Length: 112
Length: 113
Image 1 (cartoon, each protein chain N blue to C red):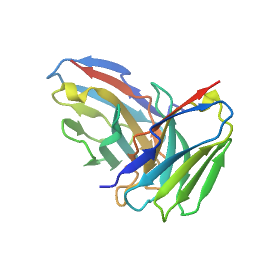
Image 2: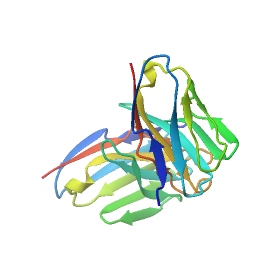
Image 3: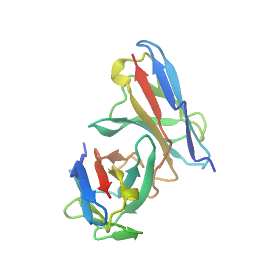
Image 4: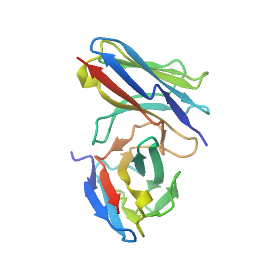
Protein backbone atom coordinates (compact mmCIF):
# COMPACT_ATOMS: atom_id res chain seq x y z
CA UNK A 1 0.00 0.00 0.00
CA UNK A 2 1.06 3.55 -0.55
CA UNK A 3 2.68 5.49 2.25
CA UNK A 4 3.47 9.15 2.66
CA UNK A 5 6.42 10.20 4.76
CA UNK A 6 6.68 13.78 5.98
CA UNK A 7 9.79 15.51 7.21
CA UNK A 8 10.53 16.98 9.58
CA UNK A 9 8.07 15.64 12.17
CA UNK A 10 8.20 18.93 14.02
CA UNK A 11 9.72 22.31 13.45
CA UNK A 12 10.26 25.41 15.56
CA UNK A 13 11.17 28.57 13.69
CA UNK A 14 11.58 32.17 14.64
CA UNK A 15 9.01 34.58 13.26
CA UNK A 16 10.12 35.93 9.92
CA UNK A 17 12.19 32.88 8.97
CA UNK A 18 11.53 30.68 5.96
CA UNK A 19 10.89 26.96 6.23
CA UNK A 20 10.24 23.89 4.08
CA UNK A 21 8.23 20.75 4.78
CA UNK A 22 8.64 17.68 2.58
CA UNK A 23 6.29 14.87 1.68
CA UNK A 24 7.62 11.74 -0.04
CA UNK A 25 5.45 9.01 -1.47
CA UNK A 26 6.32 5.31 -1.70
CA UNK A 27 4.41 5.07 -4.99
CA UNK A 28 3.54 7.23 -7.96
CA UNK A 29 1.54 10.26 -6.94
CA UNK A 30 -1.91 10.80 -8.41
CA UNK A 31 -2.60 14.21 -7.01
CA UNK A 32 -1.04 15.67 -3.90
CA UNK A 33 -2.94 17.73 -1.37
CA UNK A 34 -1.72 19.94 1.44
CA UNK A 35 -3.83 20.61 4.51
CA UNK A 36 -3.36 22.58 7.70
CA UNK A 37 -4.82 21.67 11.05
CA UNK A 38 -5.01 23.74 14.20
CA UNK A 39 -5.20 21.89 17.49
CA UNK A 40 -8.68 20.53 18.16
CA UNK A 41 -10.01 21.52 14.78
CA UNK A 42 -10.60 19.95 11.41
CA UNK A 43 -8.33 20.12 8.41
CA UNK A 44 -8.28 23.15 6.18
CA UNK A 45 -7.44 22.63 2.51
CA UNK A 46 -4.42 24.64 1.34
CA UNK A 47 -3.47 23.48 -2.14
CA UNK A 48 -3.77 20.66 -4.63
CA UNK A 49 -1.04 19.68 -7.11
CA UNK A 50 -1.71 17.32 -9.96
CA UNK A 51 1.07 17.56 -12.51
CA UNK A 52 4.78 17.00 -12.24
CA UNK A 53 6.56 20.32 -11.92
CA UNK A 54 3.40 22.09 -10.85
CA UNK A 55 3.81 24.91 -8.37
CA UNK A 56 1.10 26.83 -6.58
CA UNK A 57 1.18 29.72 -4.16
CA UNK A 58 -1.26 31.19 -1.72
CA UNK A 59 -0.18 34.23 0.25
CA UNK A 60 3.20 33.23 1.69
CA UNK A 61 2.86 29.48 1.15
CA UNK A 62 4.21 27.76 -1.97
CA UNK A 63 3.84 24.08 -2.80
CA UNK A 64 5.67 22.17 -5.53
CA UNK A 65 5.26 18.68 -6.94
CA UNK A 66 8.20 16.68 -8.22
CA UNK A 67 6.48 13.70 -9.79
CA UNK A 68 9.68 11.91 -10.77
CA UNK A 69 10.91 12.01 -7.20
CA UNK A 70 7.41 11.23 -5.92
CA UNK A 71 7.83 14.19 -3.64
CA UNK A 72 6.19 17.47 -2.78
CA UNK A 73 7.47 20.38 -0.76
CA UNK A 74 5.66 23.13 1.11
CA UNK A 75 7.58 26.34 1.60
CA UNK A 76 6.56 29.16 3.91
CA UNK A 77 8.20 32.52 3.45
CA UNK A 78 8.60 34.96 6.34
CA UNK A 79 6.73 32.80 8.82
CA UNK A 80 4.16 34.33 11.17
CA UNK A 81 2.52 33.01 14.35
CA UNK A 82 -0.63 32.42 12.28
CA UNK A 83 1.27 29.77 10.32
CA UNK A 84 1.60 27.57 13.42
CA UNK A 85 -0.23 24.26 13.28
CA UNK A 86 0.03 20.80 11.83
CA UNK A 87 0.63 20.46 8.11
CA UNK A 88 -0.44 17.25 6.43
CA UNK A 89 0.05 16.01 2.92
CA UNK A 90 -2.49 13.70 1.35
CA UNK A 91 -2.41 11.68 -1.84
CA UNK A 92 -5.02 10.01 -3.96
CA UNK A 93 -4.86 6.29 -4.51
CA UNK A 94 -5.45 5.02 -8.02
CA UNK A 95 -8.94 3.60 -8.33
CA UNK A 96 -10.06 4.75 -4.93
CA UNK A 97 -11.69 8.00 -5.88
CA UNK A 98 -10.92 10.65 -3.35
CA UNK A 99 -10.16 8.23 -0.53
CA UNK A 100 -6.96 10.02 0.35
CA UNK A 101 -4.18 8.68 2.48
CA UNK A 102 -2.21 11.10 4.62
CA UNK A 103 1.24 11.56 6.01
CA UNK A 104 1.63 11.73 9.78
CA UNK A 105 1.95 15.49 9.74
CA UNK A 106 4.53 18.14 10.54
CA UNK A 107 3.95 20.26 13.63
CA UNK A 108 5.08 23.84 13.11
CA UNK A 109 5.65 26.28 15.95
CA UNK A 110 6.54 29.90 15.27
CA UNK A 111 8.19 31.83 18.05
CA UNK A 112 7.90 35.60 18.18
CA UNK B 1 -23.43 27.07 4.13
CA UNK B 2 -22.80 24.51 6.90
CA UNK B 3 -20.34 22.30 4.99
CA UNK B 4 -19.59 19.04 6.82
CA UNK B 5 -21.27 18.71 10.20
CA UNK B 6 -20.26 16.10 12.74
CA UNK B 7 -22.09 15.25 15.93
CA UNK B 8 -21.40 14.85 18.75
CA UNK B 9 -18.21 16.83 19.34
CA UNK B 10 -17.27 14.83 22.41
CA UNK B 11 -18.34 11.39 23.61
CA UNK B 12 -17.33 9.05 26.41
CA UNK B 13 -18.29 5.39 26.13
CA UNK B 14 -17.77 2.35 28.27
CA UNK B 15 -16.21 -0.75 26.76
CA UNK B 16 -18.84 -2.77 24.94
CA UNK B 17 -21.26 0.08 24.35
CA UNK B 18 -22.38 0.95 20.86
CA UNK B 19 -22.92 4.33 19.29
CA UNK B 20 -23.22 6.14 16.00
CA UNK B 21 -21.16 9.12 14.96
CA UNK B 22 -23.17 11.34 12.68
CA UNK B 23 -21.89 13.10 9.60
CA UNK B 24 -23.89 15.26 7.25
CA UNK B 25 -22.89 17.48 4.34
CA UNK B 26 -24.99 20.02 2.47
CA UNK B 27 -22.76 20.46 -0.58
CA UNK B 28 -24.26 17.61 -2.64
CA UNK B 29 -20.93 15.80 -2.57
CA UNK B 30 -20.84 12.26 -3.90
CA UNK B 31 -17.76 11.17 -2.00
CA UNK B 32 -17.62 10.85 1.76
CA UNK B 33 -15.14 9.22 4.09
CA UNK B 34 -14.28 8.63 7.72
CA UNK B 35 -10.82 8.97 9.23
CA UNK B 36 -9.44 8.51 12.68
CA UNK B 37 -6.53 10.55 13.96
CA UNK B 38 -4.21 9.24 16.64
CA UNK B 39 -0.96 10.70 18.01
CA UNK B 40 1.99 9.47 16.00
CA UNK B 41 -0.26 7.65 13.52
CA UNK B 42 -1.65 10.52 11.52
CA UNK B 43 -4.97 10.22 9.73
CA UNK B 44 -6.07 6.72 8.82
CA UNK B 45 -8.95 5.91 6.53
CA UNK B 46 -11.72 3.79 8.07
CA UNK B 47 -14.43 3.61 5.40
CA UNK B 48 -15.43 5.61 2.40
CA UNK B 49 -18.33 5.95 0.00
CA UNK B 50 -18.41 6.96 -3.66
CA UNK B 51 -22.15 7.56 -3.65
CA UNK B 52 -25.45 6.63 -2.04
CA UNK B 53 -25.69 2.88 -1.55
CA UNK B 54 -21.96 2.27 -2.14
CA UNK B 55 -19.37 1.90 0.61
CA UNK B 56 -15.92 0.37 0.85
CA UNK B 57 -13.32 -0.35 3.48
CA UNK B 58 -10.28 1.75 4.13
CA UNK B 59 -7.11 1.00 6.02
CA UNK B 60 -8.60 0.33 9.48
CA UNK B 61 -12.22 -0.84 9.07
CA UNK B 62 -12.43 -3.43 11.84
CA UNK B 63 -14.93 -2.57 14.57
CA UNK B 64 -16.76 0.00 12.45
CA UNK B 65 -19.76 -0.15 10.16
CA UNK B 66 -21.04 2.43 7.71
CA UNK B 67 -24.00 2.90 5.43
CA UNK B 68 -24.91 5.53 2.87
CA UNK B 69 -28.65 5.66 2.35
CA UNK B 70 -28.64 9.30 1.22
CA UNK B 71 -26.13 11.58 -0.46
CA UNK B 72 -26.10 13.86 2.57
CA UNK B 73 -25.47 11.44 5.44
CA UNK B 74 -22.68 8.99 6.20
CA UNK B 75 -22.94 7.67 9.77
CA UNK B 76 -20.18 5.64 11.41
CA UNK B 77 -21.26 2.93 13.81
CA UNK B 78 -19.20 1.43 16.58
CA UNK B 79 -20.79 -1.91 17.36
CA UNK B 80 -18.95 -2.73 20.59
CA UNK B 81 -16.60 0.02 21.67
CA UNK B 82 -13.07 -0.87 22.75
CA UNK B 83 -10.40 1.32 24.39
CA UNK B 84 -8.38 1.02 21.15
CA UNK B 85 -11.10 3.05 19.47
CA UNK B 86 -10.34 6.09 21.61
CA UNK B 87 -9.46 8.65 18.97
CA UNK B 88 -10.54 11.76 17.13
CA UNK B 89 -12.80 10.93 14.22
CA UNK B 90 -13.11 13.10 11.13
CA UNK B 91 -15.68 12.92 8.40
CA UNK B 92 -14.83 14.38 5.00
CA UNK B 93 -16.54 14.85 1.67
CA UNK B 94 -15.60 15.92 -1.82
CA UNK B 95 -17.34 16.77 -5.06
CA UNK B 96 -15.85 14.31 -7.48
CA UNK B 97 -13.28 11.62 -8.07
CA UNK B 98 -9.73 12.76 -7.72
CA UNK B 99 -9.95 16.38 -8.76
CA UNK B 100 -11.54 18.04 -5.80
CA UNK B 101 -10.20 18.54 -2.31
CA UNK B 102 -11.74 16.95 0.74
CA UNK B 103 -13.81 19.13 3.04
CA UNK B 104 -13.49 18.08 6.67
CA UNK B 105 -15.81 18.31 9.63
CA UNK B 106 -14.49 19.55 12.97
CA UNK B 107 -14.18 16.08 14.41
CA UNK B 108 -15.62 13.95 17.19
CA UNK B 109 -13.38 13.26 20.16
CA UNK B 110 -14.23 9.79 21.46
CA UNK B 111 -12.97 8.25 24.68
CA UNK B 112 -13.65 4.61 25.51
CA UNK B 113 -13.04 3.62 29.12
